[in-house]
Length: 494
Picture 1 (cartoon, rainbow, N blue to C red):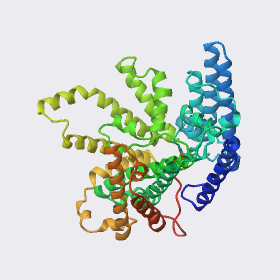
Picture 2: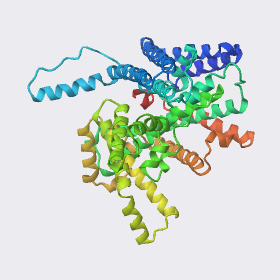
Picture 3: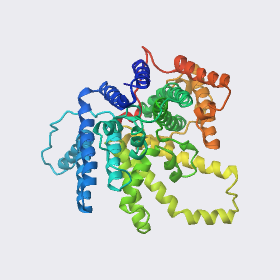
């Protein structure tokens, strides 16, 4: 069930209405049933995988608490990780691994291995697997007690607003809140109103911006040979905007839907394209995943405590695994590797940069300096996005080659840009929508407040005017309907 569908706008009000009507003691059971129904709308049989992951990690938590030795606790953690990552490997990476093995076998003239499976990637498997494994680690580290109620824990793993594309919640946050359903008053008008605003702002980002700009992006990436430098630059920049609005749109809707019911999910995006370094970018982009890798992979590997060389190795391992997490393809691995290289290069060149700044007497507090840092960071991330979006390494390399060899500045003046999927009217709608995005992100960057938080502080007439603008924009200018292939969220594939 997609957030940007009629089905969801029938499903969600029913869930919320009954949630606040039924007795508090059974609310979590109602949410659990609703969450499994939500997921089973894609493929009912894959709900078994969530159940298996839930059972394994729930039992693991109990065994960790009962174990008397560190060795025993580590054994349970290892069992939990091996079994869950094994399931993830079979459903997400088996084809990729087999294809690479066959490439090697072909080189040495050995008979190729046939694939015995015909597997469809279960929606959101990477997200709920990591969420469940995070719980196992939190119990092992003693950061919370193991959950005794299997149904309440099952709701933590399958909570429908963030089930299929995050944020990847921590047990210390979401599970703790779920335990309070029976005792605390969950309804709060201000929270509910703020949640509704977030839902429609998320839909605005997805349906008005991301799905519209996707038409332009797809036209460029599917016909690279037909375009020159300017179009390819715009195509890469457009994809950077598309994936941000698509993924941030989902996270915003998820956070808003949870807030309507009284739950606070963690922030997943914090205006990442205003970052002044790649390191800062990863503190602002997909925060739930980057913090997961930091806490459960980078730090256990040794982090930055084992000398500079080991630190760089740990960084590269973390980012390569992060790339592989996003998809079973070498393009994703290269994308992750590029971000690792960026961070290592930034750290290595830091002393040189400091000396140059001092020698040139650059005012690092000036707007021009920070703007330059933002521009460079955005350019580096956009370059890496080419590999993320490309269908293959060869396509990405060809894209980059044409980017630097087919200079064609005249297309900026001959109106040919209006022939790349979007006409003048569609492009103008996109420009106005992007202006709204910039205003909202500037508000977040300068005031550290969400659009919903800002509107809740305004007069009622202004709040309703802006909300109605979002609603009408989604209804009138959102990309959906008979002649449009309503697209799922990009991160559903991860």
